[in-house]
Amino acid sequence: MIEVGYDYPLYRPPSEANSAIFQVTLGCSFNKCSFCNMYRTKEYSERPWEEIKTEVDIISKSYPQTDKVFLADGDALNLSTERLIQILMYVKEKFPNLKRISCYAMPKNLLQKSSDELTLLNREGLNMLYVGIETGHDVLLKKITKGATSKSIIEGCNRAKKSGFIISCMIILGIGGKKYSVEHMKETARVVSEVSPNFLAALTLILEDGVYDEFMQKFGEPFEHLDDSSILDELEILVNGITPASSIVFRANHASNVYSVGGNLPEDKEKMILLIRRLKQHPELLKPKVLRRF
Ligand code: SF4
Image (cartoon, rainbow, N blue to C red; front, side):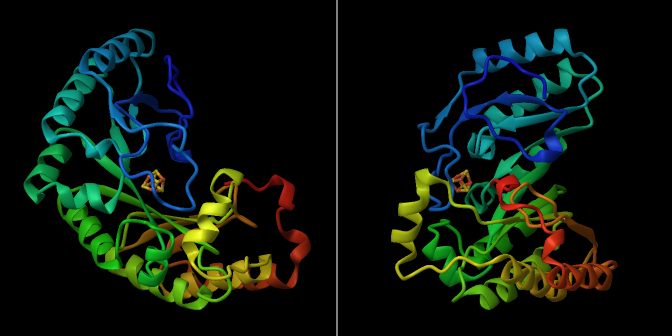
């Protein structure tokens, strides 16, 4: 990661490890998902143009060969289309070798923009969006206060895809606890199939201290955490249930996961299911709990 004077904490997707990161917004404009501790210490704000421009100038002088840029923090897509285009145009001008500009986006951000605006942003160089789906189950989306429904997730993501974006989605294993486990996965597989994102990452729920009580309170009923075997059951239902319209690069290799599983869906479905079943029979192969983090 190429550094300037960041306002911490700073988050970026694992695949942006070598990108230049510009904080065009600070925090998350929603900041209410009950499982998410990322920006609880920050109030959402939009950085002034002059500050962004200065940081682009500094980084472009030091790292003129930069080919990937990530716009932080939690939902840069919340910026007005005009401001985003101003940023995209300047970034493209200063980094002539640029191959990709990306940011996080919520379904709400996607639906706030018209298809024409999204197409324009895509043409101006914003080509990849990371969207947290978490679950496709409407009961759970309410319980985790995601601020989205399965319908808005599908609509938002499909609008972005039609506008030319590469979409990378995240879901969270274990977020429904024992009671909602099967429905969580069936509904998530349904939503993922309807969206058919280019990339899909499965993380595993680990509640940090800062949000533990809030998560439990908002859940509204006793929450029973899943053990490793049940997490693998969820993974199997998910992989088995996804029937995408186009190929999805699937990864469950996040630091929170019990084991790294990955492949293309639907092509590698059988291979992944065999691996998951083998892992269930050999718990000694799973990642030790101390090495897992969200
Ligand atoms: S999960 Fe995303 S949308 Fe929800 S509070 Fe965290 S950063 Fe914001």
